[in-house]
Image (cartoon, rainbow, N blue to C red):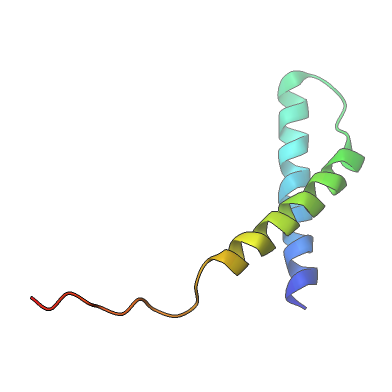
Length: 63
């Protein structure tokens, strides 16, 4: 379920970003590109989540 929701939110955010940037540039929005970019963003989020450790770091300082 987390994969579906991550893709859903990344699709919404990347689509909004695509719309805003295309409006600023004065071109038509390309939502096909937004869908491809949202898949890339989702994969990047999964990779970052796998790299970050879940366990808290033990305090080794004995001052």
